[in-house]
Length: 107
Image (cartoon, rainbow, N blue to C red; front, side):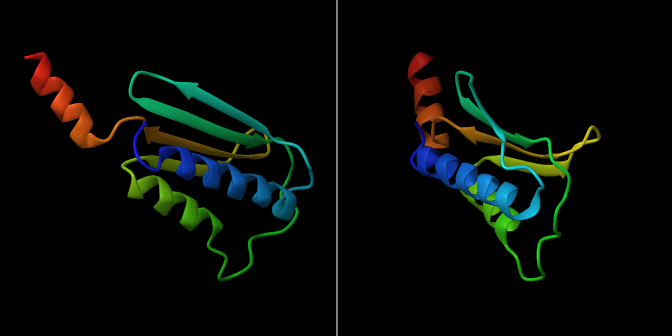
């Protein structure tokens, strides 16, 4: 696993669930993990409606996005058309250096 992927995934789930308790009218959420050969797809979804907008100066979503980007991942967070909010994150399972070395040794 890419150095930092496990901690990054944990912190993103932690922040996404904290946001549910702060900003949604529900106390439940669904956390899904899906693995491919080289990526972890992490999804946190709640079906509630917005209870309170994030206060000015709140950095939860920005922090999650920066964490994902710092290890070569991506993060999308948005309200869902059917209601609720969803955070979708793709994180690498292998570092760029390890993938390149594996490809070179296979040739």
